[in-house]
Amino acid sequence: VFGAFQLSSVASATDPVAVVAMLGSLGAPKKLSSLIEGESLLNDGSAAVFFLLLKDFASGGKPPTPLNIIITTLQLAIGGPLFGVVWAAFISFWLDKIWNWPNLE
Image (cartoon, rainbow, N blue to C red):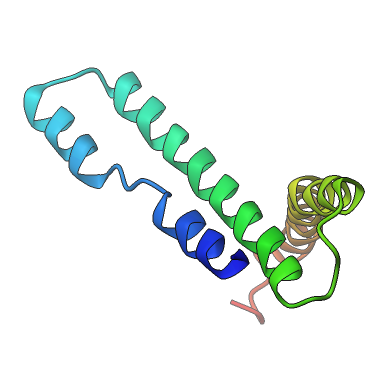
């Protein structure tokens, strides 16, 4: 059952490439294209969280209790962006230190 849900979580993520291309050819405002692309990113992120949540349950690692669902969802939804912010700060600090360093360039 969890395998079928995993497949549906991957298949349900929409791809806005054709829609954005059509909007561009029709002369629609760029803001509308940006909104559709942003909505697609949110859909892709939700599908990834749902897939990873179901992967844990399908592998038998965690029982699908409401508490485990909430904890895993929070870990994925908050932990991922937090990890990204920490790495972005580290890379920004590192690039600031090596900017215009002739030996490295």
